[in-house]
Image 1 (cartoon, one colour):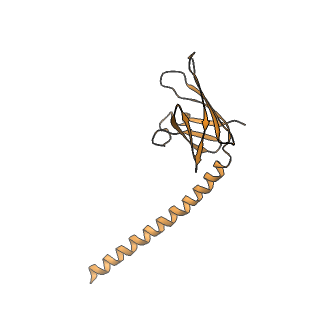
Image 2 (cartoon, rainbow, N blue to C red):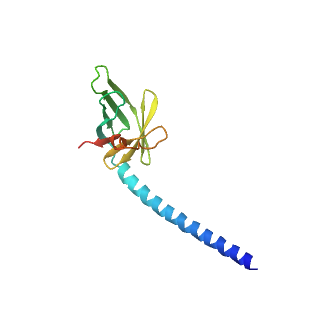
Image 3 (tube, rainbow, N blue to C red):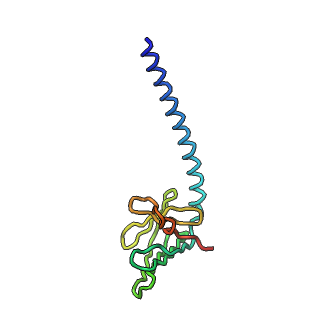
Length: 140
């Protein structure tokens, strides 16, 4: 009888822990959605920055997001004469994820407070000491 009581007690504790964790997750998730909604509601505008480059001095980047869901994406490889590219099209936003297309390939950004963070192919922000430099800042 004791093993059955112990098993019941352990099961009850595990279920309770899972329920508490689940509630905590949903509570935080709702808060995150509220903050994301606040950021996403005011994302239109002009963002600029200089992104890291492996074989040049940097990539001067400007992304303009219009209210009609169109964008202009300008990139210029510093210290290169032929290094200027211009892309236009429509963008999509889902929660706090922005997607544009560059030469038919999707480019994703995480929408932050007056910032856009360039994401990799796995939709993750860059890490390491260069990670913070993959950011475009909203211009006033």
